[in-house]
Length: 135
Image 1 (cartoon, one colour):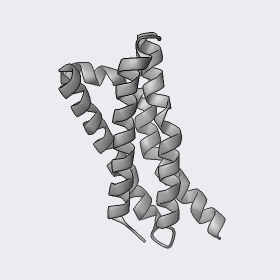
Image 2 (cartoon, rainbow, N blue to C red):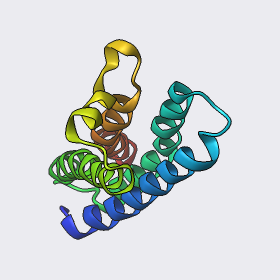
Image 3 (cartoon, one colour):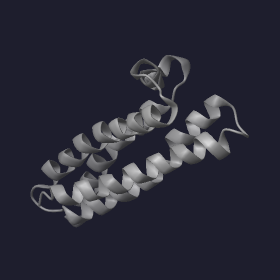
Image 4 (tube, rainbow, N blue to C red):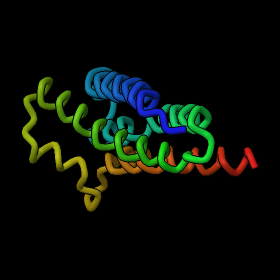
């Protein structure tokens, strides 16, 4: 069953975690680590939490329309989380869009793309695994 309200509620939890993680990374962690290490911290720490939210979403939307439900989450979560993360950077550090887009510069080792990729892939993988285990 497709449950957009569930996908939205789980996204809100993800967005809060990502912003809080960014705050911790930009304040406490940044004092002890290099800039690149902080970027890796901010990209990798939320991934297990996102996987947990994807599993919850997959279990609640299991059924004949699991793929549509997983696609709702897979399309909503990355785009809106990037937007919220941009708003955080813009309001906190007055960061312009060009410098925010530098987070996606994987050619110099920026890990932010892994977070966005995880937000896209994890709902689909969790939904597929949930369907396979229910057979």
